[in-house]
Length: 84
Image (cartoon, rainbow, N blue to C red):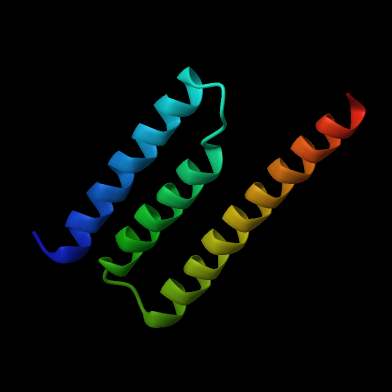
């Protein structure tokens, strides 16, 4: 087991931890869980035997998707607070 596998499992565990805390808590931890999931997928990607270009495109896609999801969630939260 190399370092990327250890980091992958660590961040998948953190994702599950933050996801469960988000369900049970009044405060939202979804941003934390999205970032932990993104890092886990990136470390999983680094450990694969693919060409560098496939890894770069896939990594850019994952980072963009995570950023958009976090941004949309925050925008929705601000809009909900403004309506109250």
